[in-house]
Amino acid sequence: MVHFDRLIHNIVSNKNIEKTKCICSTAFFQAITDSDKDFANKYLKGSISAFTPNYTKVEDFPTEYLNGTINYLPFVQNPNFNLGLTSFFNNSITSEYRTEYNCELSRMYDFPTLPSRLSSCYAFSDFETCKLVSNRYGWNINTVKKFKLISHKYNKVAKVNMEIISLERYANNVSSIDITTQDMIWKSYWGGKKSIELELPTINGREKFKSGLIWEYLVEGILSLVEE
Image 1 (cartoon, rainbow, N blue to C red):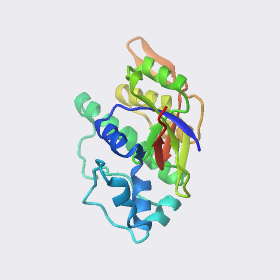
Image 2 (image 1 turned 90 degrees about the vertical axis):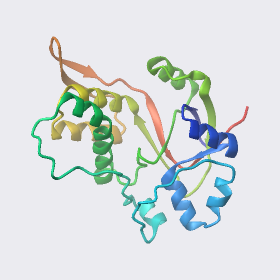
Image 3 (image 1 turned 30 degrees about the vertical axis):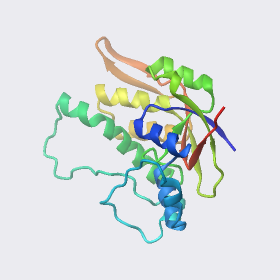
């Protein structure tokens, strides 16, 4: 069993933990449900969950999940978009999704069997990392709980540097990132690289920014609460 510390700052996650003593990633849940018809009832008893009614059902979800051919993207690019330039407001409100959209495309094309950020649970390996993240981003350290990953053949886990995401989000807001740079960023992220460097515009001209390093884990599976 692998132990994880996780910062909990979502009311639904808190309710799930309170009722079921565990957290389950979405694609893993669907794969298990499709292979064990009674699993959903056993897991959902007393819990809160959300479902997407407008999805395209696949014939064999568990197999496609394991093969990495499930499509996790809820939205696609607009092929009829007519503006050659985008406003700062447009850029700011679409930046977060563009980050996750490009990240997911990279995973689909180059690392298909890794867990998707759009489905996974997020965790850290130890309390020290939780404290680092809490200090840097203001997350409430008192919400940290310890979990163990329940062993299952459908489990997927990826160790990735969350600070690459942080730097890309910043770059997305202050600059237009070319395709070559995007490719470098996401291959570094999914490939488990420790740090990257980007040259970005500032009020004093272009400067180099390093991502730094904070390891996090993307987990497809069930994380069971360790009560101490």
